[in-house]
Length: 459
Ligand code: PXG
Image 1: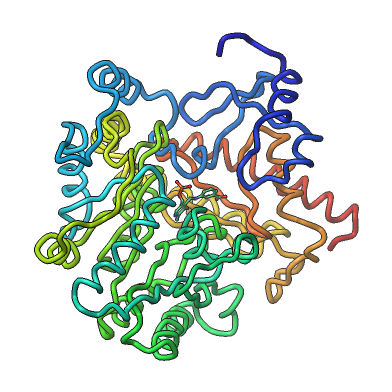
Image 2: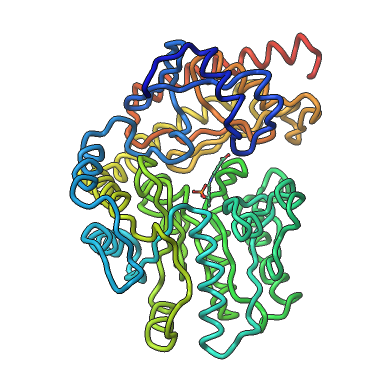
């Protein structure tokens, strides 16, 4: 930044030139963006000097928290030494090689190879290309169909948005692209309240089998899912769900893809969400937490079943990005993963702050607005309801989540609203004392939202 400007000056320039992602441009221009200027540990500072507890880790990515010197040093060193070289023309750079090696160590044992991209969306584009190529090489080109889920989020490129199950996104741009189909999500509060969560998990998994049979098993290439849906509202599936999905994929010989863009790198209390949920994917998309968001990087871990075919029978795989294996991004990722190991952050989530958050969240169940409170590692969701009996929702026109989110902003807390679900995913470095502080803010914002609901007679 060459000059310091006032908040109003920043907002005017922003409104004049910057088209933000997933934004109604006109209404934001009228209101003015919030300008974030600095961050340290789990706290942001805005251009008005307000301190904000970032319970969303930036955008589900700043796993090691802000201001980690090891990552800053790694980027600086690598920029001086070799800021860029590509991996296309039979070349490689040391950080990309070392990162590929380290990823093979920290991911489940079936993963010994990685394909790098610049983001999670690009990673999922790679998944589509790779899955179809795999079946092609094996002489089954008719296996084209990829099954995903409604309300999934897999990115915003043409393939990413198609794999995703967001109807608003599909409505813009003629999506999904051909041969991508969706089943319902394993959301107990929406589909399964009349049965136990475990029973529901099995039923939701069998929707996959129904779809495979409807499409024709010989045409199905893969199933993709987030271990826990993030952007869809932290939908935590019953424990029975993923093992049954695995059984069904095995039975029909279908590839299983875990989108670990949010769940990877410790978020759920294990290195990867598939380990928490008990399944063994053939491909794993990652991004975000691989560098804690300090610089962009994504990729796909390629299981040996697929790697063997691509390597031994595939010839040239005609796919790749300028930034596949970017040396600065890879150097930062190396420093980040080593820091996660050094600070024992996965254990910290699994043994300490994860269970502590689960207990704290459970105490919110007594709040009149909270119909359900769930966590998985350091992801959490509160379902806001009009009436706890039958988890009756507020009228959609009330926009209860946005009302609550407004109070969060006003009170120095970043918590996200997805419909009527309030969600958090704080940095993994959060302490118990900071969780107490966050819970105090969350309770205050729920109380303010309840007061609005009573005053406005929404309840
Ligand atoms: N897969 C998953 C599971 C994601 O959560 C992507 C892929 C795409 O990654 P890139 O790096 O291309 O953005 C994501 C991204 C939200 C929100 O509102 C979530 C994401 C992105 C933007 C907003 O929660 N997740």
